[in-house]
Length: 462
Image (cartoon, rainbow, N blue to C red):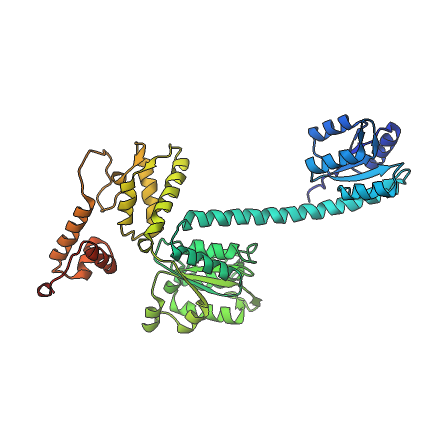
């Protein structure tokens, strides 16, 4: 057990006999006590070391104790002040309390009176500091939350605004399960964390699990926990994910890849709010919110009997879909600016300018890896860039090795893109699905680009 920190007290009074006697009394009661006989000495002592409490006389040479009270409450708001005086009237008492004194004692007073006053102050300081710690934790959580939103959801698109609105709605209802859908790299786990840390569960556990990465032979132990000796290798009791996430959030990433056998057990745990460890007989009460995420179309998996319909209905009380980056090109420029600034600072490099052609080139890129791919692109470009401006030459947008030498070349991006589309269509017999696969883009993206370049497929080519 850590030793209790001594309360540090400053006595400011011009009656030296009184201060010496009070100092001795308080030190016998394990307080750390300093004295001053003039306002100047008092302020100098305050500058040298922090205090928890000041015992302040109203009448002092050269300055009123009430004026000192106003100053110290302003300069040292974490320190409390007990006012003492042999000449005080009711008006002075009222004014002192209005100016922030925590107590008022009239001289002469008994030692027990000042001791009780200090003990009351000490209890108040303890409660106040505990409150400040909670406020600081909340402030740190809010700061972290803002940082996460900034890093992943910088953007101007209505789609991202809708995602954040739905996340804030989900945060207000901590018992509601949420299903987050979207392609890989769109930031599904970050949305889950935003929901958790903006909710009343923010001080509880956020347990993230990749459902597809759990070893099938140990999946029951991983989720439900086990008791010592329940199987070979179970050398200690172990808590499972359900118990770790109790009172908090269990984030199940890639939920569609969860083994079918475990889906039924997960559903039972959600409905009954009780679990049993592997090898155990005791029923353990649990209560957690599930936020699940997937990049699959769950409805198709339900039709093929790879995912339980009843579990799906339990998980998607509220569904949040994060659109791919290619469907919100207006978000590319602010994301690009953020990542360039982030990696310039991280790599200790000067902040480069961004060529306007680069922004347009990125807006025309399909981004199969979404925001994560853009981030990796920028990191790689910042590592190899030795110029003051980032341009398309610093980015690998067509699958070819990134240029290291930056030799002057002449390229017409739109012309090359149009030629590549025509070449792919020609080689695939104008089969759009095969052409899109060859180009590394989706069929919908190919169709959009064909419309952009007015590429039509004649009937005799079908």
